[in-house]
Length: 208
Image 1 (cartoon, rainbow, N blue to C red):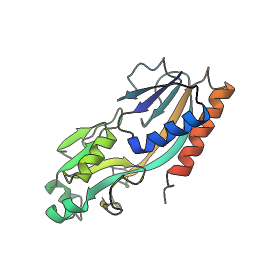
Image 2: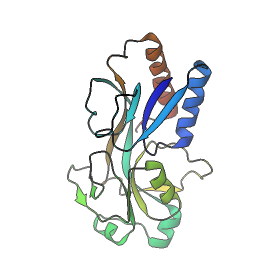
Image 3: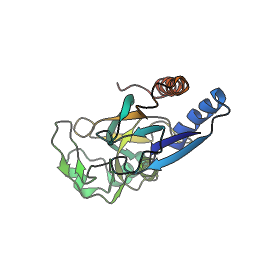
């Protein structure tokens, strides 16, 4: 049994191939997956592997591996922009419906800027679930501020989602994989972690 904690809202179409890969290489391994809203406050002692997007590691004796870095930025559907117009300044965002992701330990009402100074926003919707917010953006509900691994959305034409103010708004968001230090030396677990790292490296496009 491998007990895995993952952030709320990882895209199913990104996680499913990883589960298939693990099963193909370890057919007798059962996986117990727990979706975690906030790894900084949750009880994590029963986990063998933790994936998290928090800005700092949770308390405990963990070994941390950075799996990937994502852009965290504003995106909107072309349908929404056709109806509401494309904002060309920070001030213009006030006239739009904003959907904001809340990172663990952070405030979804603050929009980070590339300059380093955040600005306050009044979102229509705030959620810790990245996938749910992305689906809302695809449905044309509003402009979303979310981490984006830039994986293709199943059934969605390329170019459907458009970055908004990418020269002003955003930051990088790492996805970390944590393993209890007491388990990190186990050969089978180390081999499994290498499979996960290789899968991510071959699936997620690097930041350009």
